Length: 277
Image 1 (cartoon, helix red, strand yellow):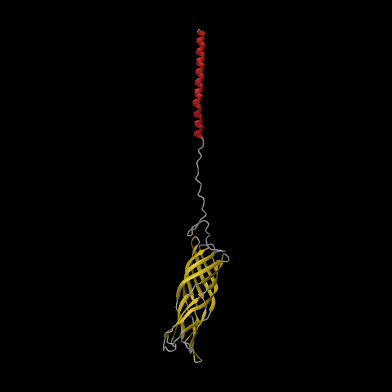
Image 2 (image 1 turned 90 degrees about the vertical axis):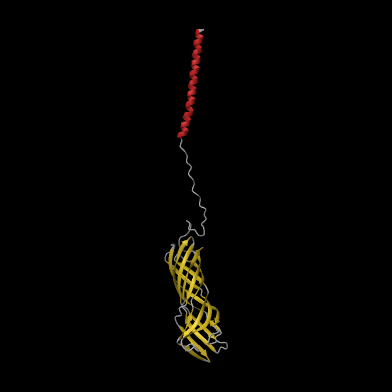
């Protein structure tokens, strides 16, 4: 009996020891697992950069916007233009009864005018462009001098008015291609059509008809383009045109005709906004 109790006590102690060891291992295992989890590297999520939309606003300068002007660029420009005839010299004569009377002390005077202007320009190379301007302006014409017939002494005779269409083609050399500020000089030619001409019917000479022939001549110019924002540019330009006008006026019965050869030589000043396509 004593031996049985001793054996039972030993078995109970062994079971208790085994149970305690298992519980200890169970308690340690989670701690070890937790330690591995805590010490594991933390993955930080880096925000991705926004994708470019590929759209650039009409009035924006973006990374894709080309700076300055160069080969292949095409521009349309809207400007305000001033036409300033210089009236350098005149040759005026009166024809009546088969006689021709030169008026040595008389010259023509043509008024200045301002109008809108449209310009088309294309760059053949980075430095060379060709442009065409188009506008139409109305001018008053007068004869001034001491020997104007039937006026006696220095006086002004209002001859009439005329509209002129002077398309001008110019080739320009640009000094700073692909730069925001790009000055240039150019040379070209102009042609002049006179239309909607009206004589001053209330003049002392009784003139009722005014006419002028087609004319043209060379032109030179200088100016600059400046890139404002995106494909928008500011332009300023000065042209000097060399043309000589041939005009005549007559009375109803064509018994009196006044002829004039006038060096108009207008200076053309313009400033405006251009858009590159």
